[in-house]
Length: 253
Image (cartoon, rainbow, N blue to C red; front, side):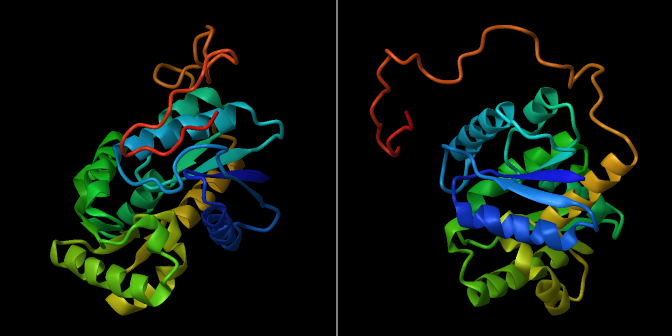
């Protein structure tokens, strides 16, 4: 079985970290392959980053030249999963949805610990779309940006403090709301005295289960194959790319 893990940003180190966690969770005989988008944000934090990330990931997935049995989308709360399910003929498992579903099997209510406050509403919307928002007690921010997650002692302290607030809000299970937090699962669980679910591991195990059961995305209704039509994924070669605007970096060409 081959499972593709797609990062939602262009930071290769985060792709590698997600793949390491995926391989640790995968069963014997499962091969994990990681891919990093060719363009997009270096970290996904907010609506602009998320929509840009979704387009970049879909661009990556449409050009796959290797066969995979399933795809894991390693971006917590990021957009794109519905489009990927339309695009691909194999199961697509989003780490947000996977973590929430497993958390619902472990306790009556769960909480999510994420990075910045600006990501909370986006995660809440993702959980609502997935049909699991009613079991979420709280989405709590640590105040740390995605690119700050390499400082493990600092991150653990922030995750533990945010997890305690989620527990006070009624959470019985904690979900790590960023793929960059995966290495903290066991330590955070010991500190908080409650089950902690890592989305990457959860998504890999669910993907393996779907493949093993011979199940894939329904083509009835919502995730029907995209209509055949002309789609432009980049400006024509003779059209100059627009320059950067305030608050933006230079756009890829």
